[in-house]
Length: 604
Image (tube, rainbow, N blue to C red; front, side, top):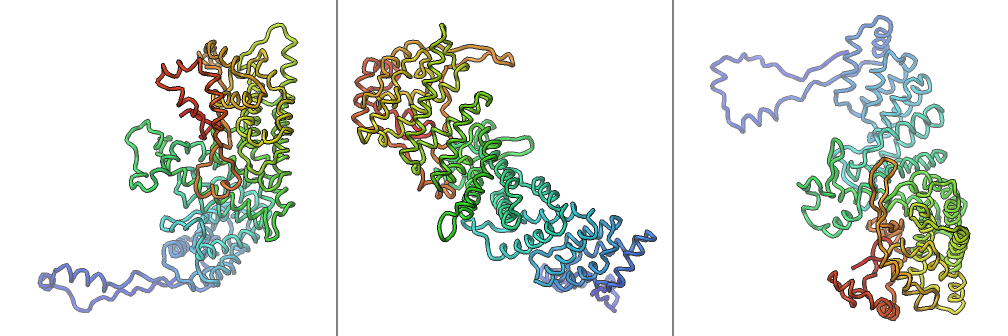
């Protein structure tokens, strides 16, 4: 290997006196630096020389020239021609690249190639394919190096509106073309590839563009490796679930309301603040995390919409396959996670494509509710999904609403009949949690969709056939444990249309409110107010960018009519002193159930 130095040694010797006489102004120093020759240039050895260096190192262990070659590849500034020539020479020596030459192989694999000219890209691709075809023990290292290119460099700009730049599209086209060839030629690469993308998935608090670019590349993989779709989608959703539970709705609302504030991303000094939380080794800005989640979900929703639709409309076969791939992920990852706010809307979006999808999803949830072998907490979650989808989906037809209500009512009556045969009924919420959740789901649907259910005599007759009066007067007393907002709205609607009369039971319950004190399995004393949780998974979607695909199919809550509210006031007039004592008034009470988050109503 030869090294040429452009450093020019002066023929005139510098005496101390000559040095002292030189000007020392700042301008002269800058000029001297600018005229300083560039650093050492390397001249690549001929291919025969590269081969001899590798052979000598393999046979004799002579490391000096070998180490210099590696340092040159790793540290020198190589031109496109240099890289192309080096890769071509290495390809000619492919049989020599055993495990002993791992450092040389790693240096070659690490050269910057993805944004170079077509000649460099072609030579790099040929080298990698030949290398892994001949020596599969390099597979893991090579795959890890290539997957690392899914992550952006710190200087890469963000994508405006999530649209990749032409430069980035060209770069990642080169990378995915190489992956496509490798996965086809070297079978063992597929498993190593999946392990690598799992291990290198960015931590949830990494910058938005890092998450966006990584997910963009994972979804790109599905175009040429559709068999990996279930695993890759499971990976993406498992990471988004972590992001979602760490981005509370309250902080997202604050972020949206103060989006123009220059201090929105400033750290909060209060260590107990929910905006900035400490997780082991780092601080997480939860308000900014909502924006990251928004960008990532927009990528997922865009993929789902484009995968299921073509220029001719909905592609039913593709839609069905994608639904069957996502449903197990929902069952294993999403359904079991409490407190999600946005990720679960993937099922809401898919259900809107065709009534058959919505019906299939509801049937899947209902089977889980009816299965006694399923954990009660999952059965409760499933029925909450049913109620929320029926209430919030503007695409849900009336026939499906009525069919679901019929199923819920029949199950409730069957449960009540089984309890009526007992001498003593234990109305503990812990014992009958599923029953109470099913009752609350039915009451929630009636209160939320009543305008669709009372516009004709036929529909009112249907509501009467559900025999909801028997439900509210049963010994299990579901009105006692359901959410007060749901109960109040349900009572107002059923009283108006003479479907059920709830106020006597509600008055009795208001005078018999006692907490339940018990000891859990860990020995902790727990005080329960005997009221069901107000978690409905399809409550208002707050994210802006990804929300564009949700708003057109989403039904906002419409407040009950003034006539119903006036009846509600008259029926509860006797209890107005309770609100007056607490600072409220009868007038304000009539409007206390307006649109909001869980469970669709809120106290103002």
